[in-house]
Length: 198
Image (tube, rainbow, N blue to C red; front, top):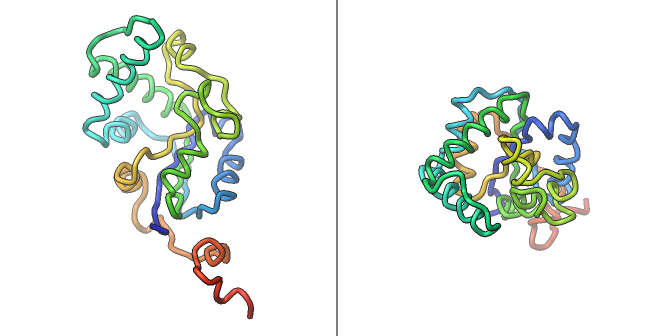
């Protein structure tokens, strides 16, 4: 449990707004440990592979999107979840390949849930103040739909431990991830705080 890992990708809008350091600081201050990091420009095929790593992503995301439209009293652009996610995926590929991204692996107890909590909800408009998206982004689903583009929400964070394993394997080679100790590991995980004093 103490070695749980999760994937975070700072999207092109986060890189362009010079928020990489602020995002890293938020995760470091929570007690998570950075296990790997790299900058890259992804191609559309890689981004499609990332978003469809869960074979149910298209159906689930499409159904949630249709429900979201209905909850707001709006008519969805289609009743077919796969058709809707086809549009979403097209926008994501355009957005995620528009510039460099920074991929990171964060490690620590409950890493997936901690990162998701600090990140905030997918839509910045409905993210709580104090979360990364709530503090640094003003975008909304409504504006993204009007502009026919992906929502600009600074980063991707794995949704589950299983997704994290699959996504980390996609983004990183095993030798790109580093196991190491920090002094703070004693404070966070050692039951009796043994070994702090010399």
